[in-house]
Image (cartoon, rainbow, N blue to C red; front, side):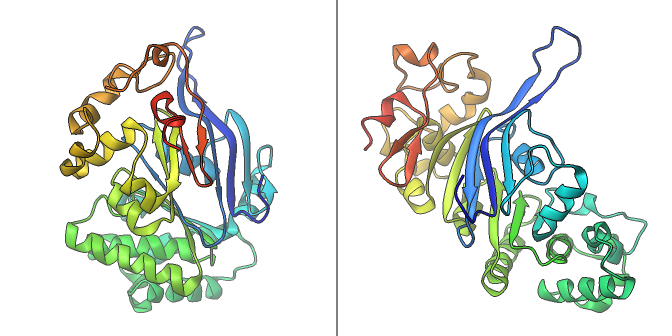
Length: 323
C-alpha cells in the first residue's frame, strides 16, 4: 500500500447476495485495486452496471466490501466501526449522481448542504450556517439563497448545491459520481469548469465516476476502465485516449468517437453495443464479443499485466505485444 494516499483499494470485492440458499449472488466488484495520491485525480469509466457507483459507495462507507482492504487518508477501515469511518471520511466529500433527489423537497437547501456537518459535534449551529454560506459562495451561489427550497433552483444550480455540500467539511478528496449526466450540454461545461477551478483554488483531488469518457478526460490525470466489476485497463488519461489497448476500451470510446473504429481492425461501436449481453462466466469477461479473441480467452481469465511504467491491461492479445 503506497504511503500518503488519500484513498486506496487493495483487492476489493463486493458480492451482493441473492435470495435463497442456492443463489450465488452478484459480483459487483472483483478484486479491484487503486491508489489516489494528493494532486493526481483518478477517473473510472465503463458501462452502466460495470460497478462504478459501487466503488463510490464502498469508498463512502455506504457498502461494506466482501473482501480486500480500504485505506482512507492512512487509516485502514476494512474492519472499522461506523464512528471511525465518519472521522476518517471527514476530508472526503461525495457528490451524488442524483443531485436533486439528494435534497429534501420539504426543507430549505440549507439543511441539505449542512448535512455532512451534522456528523461532527464540534460544529455549532452558527458555525454550520457559516460553513454553508461559504460553500455556496465557492460554487457561485449567494449565501442568502440558503433559505430557498430545492424547486426554486435550476438543474445547474442544484448541481452546484450538491458540490457545495461536499465542500462543507473542507475535503482533500472529492468523489464525483456522474457529476454532469443529468445536465444540458451547455450547463455541463459550466460545471466541469467550476470543478477545475475548485480543484486549483482548494487543492482538491478528484475520483471521477462516469459513463461518459469525455468527462473523465476533462478532470482526471489517470483513468481506470471498469468492465463487469474488473479493472481491465489503467493508464495516464491522455495515453489511454490516444492509444487504448483493451478491445473493450476501444469499443467504449468508439461509441463516443465513431472515427476511432478505423484505428483498430474489426473493433467498432457495434461491439460496444453487444458487449453487455455477451459476458461469459469463465475466462475473459469480453470473450464472445471480442474480434481479437484467442482460444484460451474463454476458459482462462487473464491477469492485469503491467506494461511499461504507467500502463496495465487485462488482455492476452494486448498484454505481451503492446509493450
